[in-house]
Structure formats: structure tokens, C-alpha cells
Length: 340
Length: 261
Image (cartoon, rainbow over all chains, first blue to last red; front, side, top):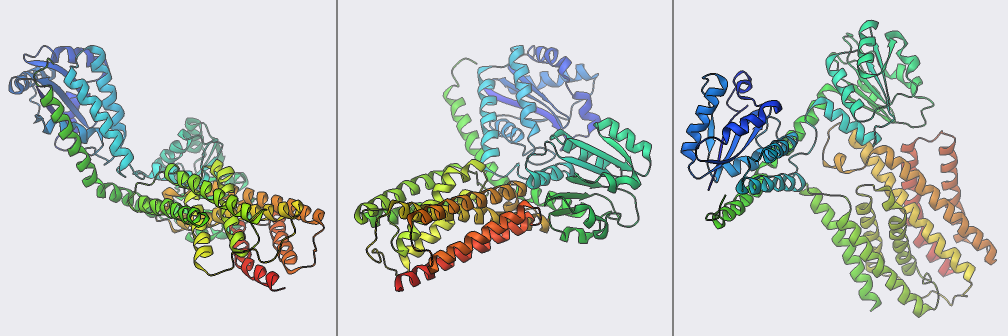
């Protein structure tokens, strides 16, 4: 028995091509049914995400199955030839283990792919298109992903401005539930950052923007409250997190302006995220007790560090994966004679 | 046998602390488990050591500086296991291991009298007072460690550099809460121990009494100022480290002067 993997991914295929081969949830079942009609194919699992479309198949004659798969895809996409990469055992096994561990992802070490592959496998199992070898392979892949995630730092740190902000807020406040956020300047990045905070349980969001209507729209979208820009200091009392991204040419939050607002906070920390260029917050604000100021450069520096840490872990991850590939190949040899 | 128990306990704390350092360095640190196991085993060994010395001295074994240091180590671990671990503060156990290891090594490597300094009158109130005082110092020690972790995390956040320490230390708000509550606990225990000392009728006009009263007053003042909001968490953290360090450094001197008298 051989495990065949054929697919396209963000590494070599642009999104305009990938989208032609994407398999949505609504036609997954029929696609799996069609694949199982291919001569020589014992079972199949289809992984279709925004970054990749991959077909995993169990077969004793991979060349024939590959021809059948190309023909199937041509029929499905209206005569478009898929620029497929293909792997057979053991490379196909290594490839799946790398993919499921996030080593092949656009953002190294991202964890969403594990859930997506689990979902793809569950659908295939439900449709009855998996075989003993594929079942064993995917179960083993999930164990590999778990081990790689827990024993290395491949998922360490955050890799977007929003997630770094949430992570830092966690290091300041612990639980974000019940915290209060103020947005000064309703830009796209501040909106995304605020949404990340809301998804982690932030209680109240106050939006202040030079154009009140835009503030009101954003507040409405994320369930917050809009205030006139000039009135932001009046509503600052219980704010825990301040997100700034105005287009002001000079700092609008200065030490002199902030110090009186901090009196009576009883040492409660204030986390300021300054996403604006030129900066909205005077750098000396970071010298105040219990105030933690992060500008766009410091957030990007943390992202860079996280990716560096992750890259440094690739060798360890590959070693773990090699070990598991060896184990799985042994299992396949041992069960070569048994029925699929 | 007693000596073996102490050496083994020291070795266990060393192992727990070394493992944490290794795991942090290798990026494999996971809070709990290994260090907690080391603390539990170390606590059992220290308890056995104290029990044996208690059998020999026929009372609570805190009659020499060596005894006091061992008992304080035991108290620190006791407070960590009873209270500190409830906060689930990552790395607090490791910091505790390091402090206990330091005190145990100091007690064993620096030459000091181990035998009771003078025949001791066995009054249960005095023994309760002495034991509870040292348990209170265990709470102050843990408060100092939480304070140290607060200052480290504060520095990490102010530096804006990220890094392993930032990710592994607990949230700064949790550290501030733990720091203040542990000072409250130590202060409460020390107050009870003073009451027990007064009930016992022991002489109060001694150097030891005034030194302890001074430390009690400083902690009380710190809590009072915190309560009326004029002392921010950062200052509480700094003071809890400073006052505990003074108490720890003053202890041998006070013990020596008391013995000399």
C-alpha cells in the first residue's frame, strides 16, 4: 500500500489558480465520492483551505491513481490542468506531518491548519472514503502535531499586530474579561486590534474619532460607544487599554495630559497601543508608573522575535517528524500484506 | 540521619531549580509539575528533619540560628504549598525553590552553632509565638518573591522587547494582587504571634523584640498606605523585597547578640 499526496499550495500556486480547485464544504461529499471512483484508489481525504488544496489517497498503484486524479480535476474545473505537486510514501507521510504541524503554512507554526485537517478527515470518515491506512495516518498526524506544538516553541509568540496586542494585554491584565478599551482614531488596524480584544472578553469599547459618524459606525459594529474626539479625556476614567491610530501630525497623548488622568487609578495598569505614524503618544509616557506604551515598531519587533524563535525550532520539529515518519513506515511495512 | 535528610532536601530543591533553568533555556518550560513535585518531596524531607531535631531538643526546634534558618525554609515551602500554589503563578514555585535552596546552603555551609544556645524553658505560648513568627516570615518571603517577579515583569513590559521571561512570568496584575495578599497574610500571622508572645509573659524589652516590632510596624505602615491608595503596587513590591531582605540580614545579627547576652 502506498500513500499518495497530490496538491497545490501557496508556495507555488497563486490564489487565482488555487481558488479554481478549492473544494467547499457543500461539495466535499460529492468530490470524495467522485475520487473514490478512480481506478486503483482505495480511499481519499481532501484538505481544502485558503492556502492549499491537497488530496491524500491510499493506493497500490499510485501512477494510475494520479492519472485518474488529473483527469478528475480537469473534468471538475473545465479542462484546467492542475499544477500539482505529488509525493508518494514516505515523502507523502512526511508532507502531511509537516503540514499538520504548521511547518508548511504561510505563517510558520500557525495552529489553525490542525483544526482544518481534523475537519477534513472527519468529513472523509463520515463519507466512508477513508481506509485503515488513511485512518492510521491521520490519527498519527494529529499526535505528531500535538507533540510538535507541546515540545517545541513552533507556536510561540504572536505573529500579527492584533494578536501581539492581545498577548501583551494578557501579560498585563491576565483575564481581559471586564476590561475597558478606548480607541482614538477609527483606522483599520485599530479596528482589527479592538476586535481581537473584544473576542477575548473586553467589556466596553469607547470610540473617539475626528469624524463622529465614523466613530459611531465602528462603535455600532463592535458593540461599543462613540464619543466626540475632543471629549475623550472625560471618559478616560476606567480605561485599561488605549488604542491610538489618528492621522494627527503631532502627539495627542502627552505626559502632561495623561498624568492628571492617571490620578486615582490606584495603580491600575494602563496599556497603550500606538499604531499611528507619526506617533500619537509621546514616548516619555512609557516612563510613568503602571503605564506600558507600545508603538508600531515595538509590536513589529515582537512579531519578528516570535518568527525568529519559531524558525529556530524548525530543525527540532523536523527531527521529531522524521522519527514519526520512520514509525509510520514501519507500521505500513508490517501491515503491507493485510487488507486496506 | 538528620543530616542526610537535610542534604537530600537541599539536593531536591537544587534539582527542581536546575530543571526549571534548563527548561527555560531550552524553551520547554511548563508551569507546575516538576517543580511542584520537588517542593513536595523537599517539604516532606524538611518536615522529617525538623521532627527529628524536635525529638532531640524535646520541643519546637528553633533554638539556634541554624534551627531558625531550617525552620524558616520549611515555613516558606509550607506557605507556598498552602497559599502560593493557589495563585497558580507561573515560576513562583521556581523562585521559591531558589530562595529555599539559598537559605539551606547558607545554613549548611556557613559555620554556625547548631546546638541549642542555652537551656530553653518550654512554654507552649513561647513556642507557638516563635514558630508562628517564622511562618509569618515564610509569607513575607513569598511576598518578596512575588514582588521581585512583579518588578521583573514590569521591566520586561517597559523594555518592549518580548522574550522568554515575559512569556513565562505571570500577568503583572496577578503578581500585584499576590504580593499584597501575602504581605497581609504575613502581617496577620506576625500580629497573632506577638499576641501569643505577650500572653506568655516573656520579657519584651529585648533587642529581638524591638527589631521584630520594627519590622511589624514597617509592614503595617506599608499595608496602611496601600489601603489608602497612596502606595502603588510597584512601591509595595519594592518595599516587600527591601523589608524582607533587611529582616533576613538582621536575623543572624539579632540571634548573635541575643546569644551573647
